[in-house]
Length: 208
Image (cartoon, one colour):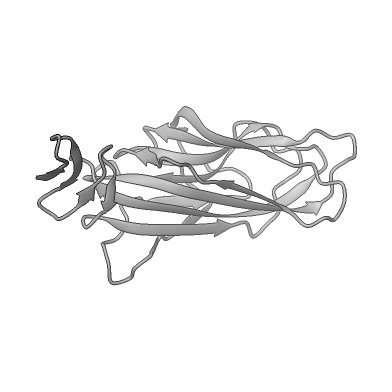
C-alpha cells in the first residue's frame, strides 16, 4: 500500500494494490474493489392500522462471506396515508437499526442497482427485502439505533411525509452486519399507510 504524506510526514491518503484510494480515516473514496449502489422498495398493499412496536419492515444485510465493508451514505423513506388517523391518536416511531446473526425472510426481495453499470462489481449486500406487514424468519440480534423518525398522524388528506437520513460520516456495515427499518413505538390505531424507500451506499475492501 502506498501512503501519501505532507511535508511534516503526516499521512494524508493511502492507495492499496487494487488502486483503492482511502481518506485518512480509512474510508475508500474511490473503491475499485466494490462500487456505488442504490436500492429501492415500496409497499403494494397498505400497512395495517395499529402496527405494533418492534416490527421489522425492511432489511439489508452484507454477506457474511464478503471481503468488503458497506458504507451507507443516504436513506430516504416516503410515507402517504391510505386511511386517516383519529384526531386524538398518537403518532408512531420507526428507526434504522443495526442487526447481526440472522437474515430476515419473507416480504419482497429487491435487487441492488449498480450506479455505473460498467463500473465496479455486483453488490455484496445480497439480501434486501421489505414488507407491508412484517419480515419473518428467525429474529436477528438487534443492535444500536442509527437514526429514528416519527411517522406522523395523518388526520387530513395532506399528501405525505418524507424522512431523509444523510449522515456526514457513512454508516459502516462489516461482513454479516445488516440494517433494518424497524418500528420502535406502535403506530396510530386507526391509520393505514404505504411507504417507499431508497438506500444509497458504496462498498470497499474490509481490510485496509
